[in-house]
Length: 478
Ligand SMILES: [Zn+2]
Image 1 (cartoon, protein in one colour):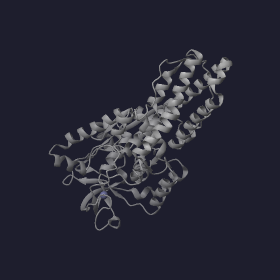
Image 2 (cartoon, rainbow, N blue to C red):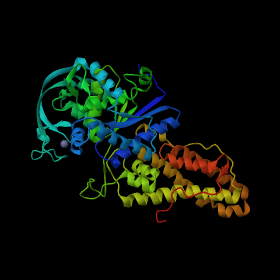
Image 3 (cartoon, helix red, strand yellow):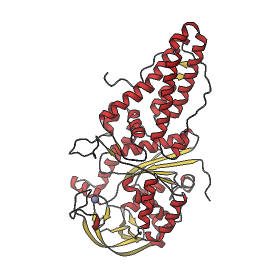
Image 4 (cartoon, rainbow, N blue to C red):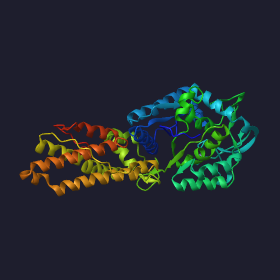
């Protein structure tokens, strides 16, 4: 049944539209964007989805506090995130909103497809509004949610349940066989032990008397869907699960969902179980990134160490921020972002290594070779495909930048400024070789640093070097 498709479908989690985007979410967007561009550059039909999650109790409460309708409130927040995708120069093919009519119909279709596993039951439990999820009594600290520092609400209600427990064995089988890859290994092991500790059926609706800001349960207009059931279905609603079977077949199953570690259970357990119940294929992979701290601490307003991605992008440009997040936040672990480290990396890797190499070689070709070089076919000796298949963005950039280092070393060893005095031909050959290498690296950089890649390819074009080359990364003290 599994055909080898030419499509490559990558998603981010959809932003829960109740706050400004944080740096961790910017990283997730860049990771997904890099995957989409990487496979597009390899000739695959990439499709990149992001969007906003717009239902749930928390949003409704904030809207009420601000004295506006929930609709008006989510329109404004979703607009913020759509503006962010432009500011970050993302290549997303679509932006899904869970308040779109098309999404609602898809979520309802999925619910109906799962109907054999959905039943009405009595629910009683503790609900944390901050989490939009039930929380176990044993997880409370002094009666409060340890993360949100609020007391959960005691909920006793009639609700629909999804028979999650039925799917434990099948999920373990899919995960162990690699049909559903969970990367990194550490996250996979956590999910396996979570499943093995026993899955319980989950409540997937709310009576409208409690919450009316959600998608109606098909056939029962006194209930709305639990926000996670609604939100997870965005991954298929956005590619025409309900409205465009051809597009749906082309892109589903997703090649990868890029998510943060806090929502791994929803994506690695609940979502695949919903799909199995509906008779649909599960995603091929879930890549789980870590969290970002600052200066060795968790970011918090009170510590004053919150990194605002918008401020950084406006000040330093998109690519430097992309570079730092992809290379210096470990792809398989938590990481750290501080202005000091960021500026060090900007100076050493981008301005001195990459930027300097490009302007130096361009200047030497202008000086020794009248601005011309011979276009040579250079063998690409980088092993990026394997690294990207494993979502090792950090290692991929490490390899590309090691290559740049070696080119800088080659210049120091060859010394064109000396050789050119009595052997201009071998100087020209050497510079042509360098130009070929730089063009090759620039093409590979296209997925990681798209704007920089374009800039380099505009400097070295069809055997001619631009006459005036502005620094790719201006010095920060200027
Ligand atoms: Zn909470």
